[in-house]
Length: 70
Image 1 (spheres, rainbow, N blue to C red):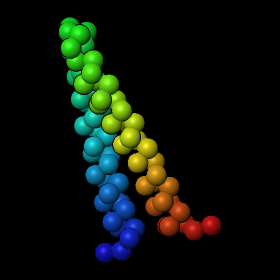
Image 2 (image 1 turned 180 degrees about the vertical axis):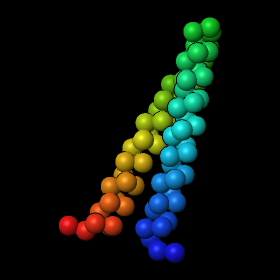
Image 3 (image 1 turned 30 degrees about the vertical axis):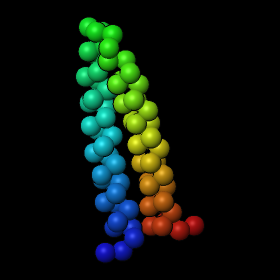
């Protein structure tokens, strides 16, 4: 298993994390309309989502650079 395969596996993990965070955020947004006490958790989930999105973008760039060198 080479480095590209490991990066692709990591990318799949990150994509799954992103999917779960988006679902969690949607659930918390619905709950926030009903109650005020979920605002802190919603803020945490949004920060984590943006961290995962940045990691996904970084992995995609690295994979593309290694697969198609300039």
